[in-house]
Image 1: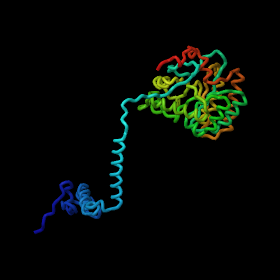
Image 2: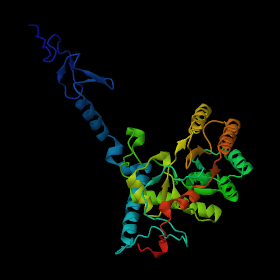
Image 3: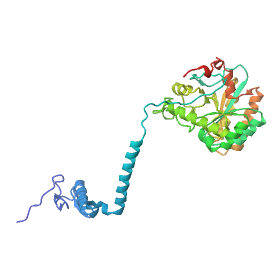
Image 4: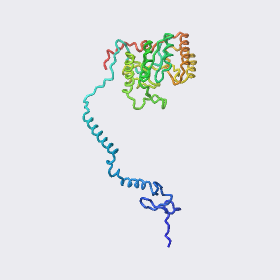
Length: 346
């Protein structure tokens, strides 16, 4: 009598023609999984098959008989005991005082807790402030400094610490030409969410200590390169700042300076040419802070030389005098309150 063939429960149209290599369960061709030249009923059986085979091997029964495993095992044990030793020897700090920084200003007078942002100076005189930011590029530095010297202009340079480390000779030349270097943080980080949502909300995880570190590290580096103290004036990277961030920096006596007009010279030649044409149409530029850059990804030294000379000639023709940022701050009514940091207690 012919044996009746069984059908698969999952696939009634198919017969159980195969057996799982491991558990010997009958399966149809659609349920079977072919692996390692055998048929299995499920992935579980495949993994168990591999594990059972592995258990039969020498590496499972005698792992330390292999020299590489023996070396790794011994190294791990050594590291474990070394870690225990250092943890045991670590001194216990019962009381810890944090001293962020000492500020020596002499007889200079500033308002140390101003948490605003200077965008334009309030002046009735025809005064204007050209500022240059330095972060990643410096190919225009010589051209800029030569033009400033030619027209007898003193300017302000907001430099990052990383820029100073990379272009020490540029920093020294700026100082030797009697310009001023101001703080643009050490690593030019993002402080707000503006790049993500166009809102200047403090970025998650940012703390006052991080702001202090970025500013103080740049100060120390500047003093190391030039032997001079840096003014307590800073500009936040990418213009990303808010009242909270400015307040943190103001605890160190720092004044935040933004800009009135950005020439977008970090983008392209076409951008700063267009911006220059629009700038000429502005009638009242008194107290304007102009934002320019020491370099860009483009190799535009020749075009930039023409642009900068034309800008200076245009402003001179309109009767403007050029000043440094620190001079503008000292002349502002806000800073003439005769509050000396020497008389303040922290």
